[in-house]
Length: 381
Ligand SMILES: [Zn+2]
Image 1 (cartoon, protein in one colour):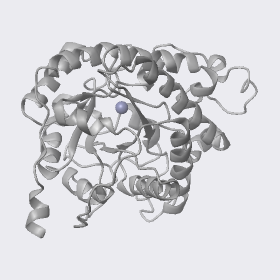
Image 2 (cartoon, protein in one colour; image 1 turned 30 degrees about the vertical axis):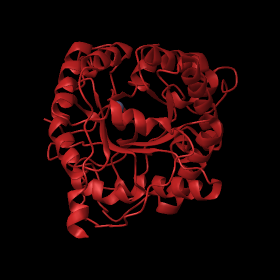
Image 3 (tube, protein in one colour; image 1 turned 90 degrees about the vertical axis):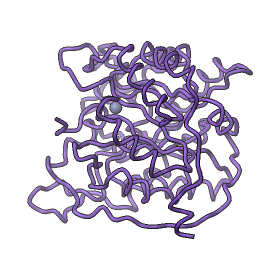
Image 4 (tube, protein in one colour; image 1 turned 180 degrees about the vertical axis):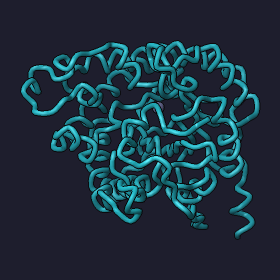
């Protein structure tokens, strides 16, 4: 039974009353058929996706937890006297313990990951305000992008280029969900605040050297649209155009994201951004995620599909909080590949370099899902 969101998403949903669901998913039909603009970075990625399934890395958060860092270790010298607990601020390690972040990136690269994700899941002013560190957002993103860039470049070979995905996560404040169970209309953030925070984050990630953007762990579509708007604005201002991956999170047994949309409705809401890939991550293990990846693969026949589930359901007794072993995760994801569902695959909470290595071996003999012409686009024309 899937009731409460867990994994990295639980870091930001604590303030949302349980059981809140939006009543109408809304399905915009945007039929802007435009030719895809040329990418200015990450140009080799689409070609790789045409030929084979690409590997994205595993969890950053639960890998960091394995180090069992103390409050003082996370603070370092610079934040020793800071007036708020910082132990759970994983993004701060980009500044105070870059060695740990680098080691985790390198372990995933050594396991075969083609794409690594920057450690910037919560590095927006809005998320960092919870730690009274909102003013640090730009620095956290710049540092996070640079650490990942160096690690990726070190492991890049002519046969296997490595890519850095600049990660934009959700925030603890959501544009379409009330923080007050007695007042469904209440909001503690608006679109403009989110847009500004995501713009600052995306700009710093771009400056730090990322190859693509990953808007991930989306449980509120309106938050994600603020991020997509900000990224588009950044592209317009800079003339850059990076591949984009959009990854939602199904938190509920009815197959909806927290703000109420089915996977199909979610896709219709964000496809105007013309991502290179759309997918799902976190909250569920591969076994429970399967029907929603199937639904998405049907709904988005003209777009690559990404999938990085948690290592099963949480087990508080295990070291990472999740105990699905690499062979089990790899076997399940191999079935996804055999069914022709996926183009980019990896892991979220509880997955380790061993998981990524096992997934790589399991899917290597199988062809990637091929793109088809979009049937609903054709029908609407
Ligand atoms: Zn996760």
